[in-house]
Amino acid sequence: MAQILQINKDNNLVLVGMDDKTTLEVSPLDFDFAIAEGMLIDAYKHEDRYIFSQSNNTASGVPIPYGMKPVNKIPYALLFFFFGHIGIHEFYAGNPKKAFLWILGCVGSIICLCFPLLIFIPAVFICAIITFCKEADENGQILIKGKR
Image (cartoon, rainbow, N blue to C red; front, side, top):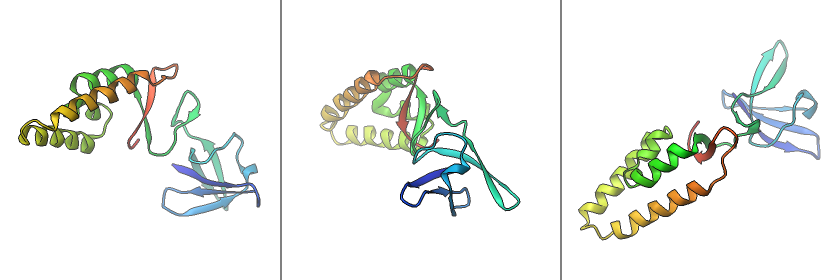
């Protein structure tokens, strides 16, 4: 999967980051769909030219920005609200490393005589409420930070 890194309108070039960590400069006319910076695309090499197609990695037809991941809003927000202090919502979102950091934060708060819990747990509830307030797409998904 490739990514559109930069669209330079001055010299009419698009900089595409390829899977193998190389870059490629192409014309915007090489795309038969609307493009945007950060958009993930599929790139295929055919002899001496590239063919680009729109990636299926979209939510509601809108490109998913790099570093964001779609998750179902209701289960994610409920897990965040009830079990957010121990990181269960991050397991649901497919971010086990972040989940373990949440668990360490919770255990660390308990070890430190519960004083940080007075700040930690209300912060989790506030974040969960913010998650509830995010507008979902027609599939009920919201975008969160994390690897796809």
